[in-house]
Image (cartoon, rainbow, N blue to C red; front, side):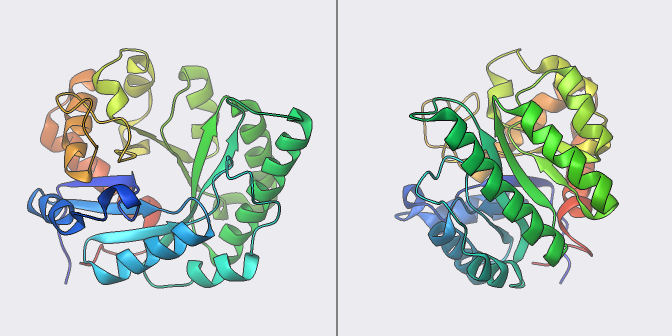
Amino acid sequence: MTHNYQYFDIHAHVHGPEFEDDIAGVLSRAKEAGIGIITVGTDEESSARAVSLAEAHGGVWATVGVHPTDTKTENINKELLTGLAKRDRTISIGECGLDYFRMKGDEAAEKARQKKIFEEQIEIALETNLPLMIHCREAHEDVLSILQSKKREHGGKLRGDIHFFSGGIDTAKRYLELDFSLSFTGVITFTHDYDEAVAYVPLDMIMSETDCPYVAPVPYRGKRNEPSYVVEVVKRIAEIRQKPLPLVAETLVENARRTFFDANLTA
């Protein structure tokens, strides 16, 4: 049946070990608050766990992918990830992308490795007609260059979200020109560094996430983050934009629907 979600946490890691002991309670609190959840794979093993969790619980969907900092991965298992991507509860490829923060060893070789596995996952997204869940840290120029090249080749089939967006207005504009949405975390509740970007991005191109168990928002800082806390992120987006909370919340859910689902969200 169709469920009318009040909020959507488009990037969580509730299949992770931090939630093993109380996953039922975490999902129950999210359900009571009317929150849909996308739980995000970061390597082949966690992607399989994300899909299994999504298949076992209503209101949860999965992404499958390999995080750029997973340095043990030189070549992705395309057959495995493509198989997981075709499962009914999988709605995105990622999180994938580039991360040049705290690189060790041969930086040129590491950048080349990351670009290779990023482009391999873009190909899976294109082949399976799924949007991308992109991670980018201190690598916007290279991420943009890759996406711009793929966009020229594939047009509207290349789509997705820049998760945990941490750039300024100029960088946001360049992603928006590629029709990629931008999502924000609880960080916006305790720093003003991203207020300008939150205010700048068109309301129909912005989404909310927790990235739990990390970066819990005010008033939960220092605690393990969880999907029910995404409400605080949406509240802050509404405050920054000076718009009514119900309007912002409804629009962000619709944005998730449009970006990650072909039809109405089902329980």
